[in-house]
Image (cartoon, rainbow, N blue to C red; front, side, top):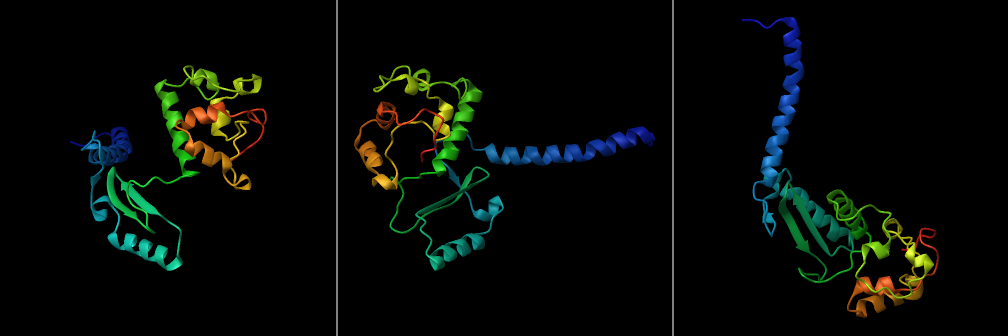
Length: 197
């Protein structure tokens, strides 16, 4: 029995959609089959669509060009396929990550807003830290929002830059509570007006 022309058109329209959904389902099923867990599971690069040869070439290029890289971790499809430490660095060693943390922090803030843990980026620090006693809490500091912090325009007198020989960074590292240390800093400018790395 043949389908009418109109039903043939509908069938031809849905076949690619079903094919895409089937591929997506198999991808997701493969990705999440061992979750939840507390640790990454290892996999060969080839099993996750990468080649060991390309990873070896990457390592040779790093060595040949003398790139200042301390570690490389590659997770693909939820599996750890490559994890190595270079130039005297080793697993578990604390290390500054600097700018890479901004992307991760911004993503986590977005998730927290989506989950309802944080209302929005316009919440002030006093709303975000209601149980913290904050020193130097003047009018300008009370106006500081999460958005100001994400934009690196807090207005705080951080003294973190290389111009100041990282004096603020060194002082923060010596403190027991880095969050409290930063909340207690005096203000240098109004929040949201000046970028300060």
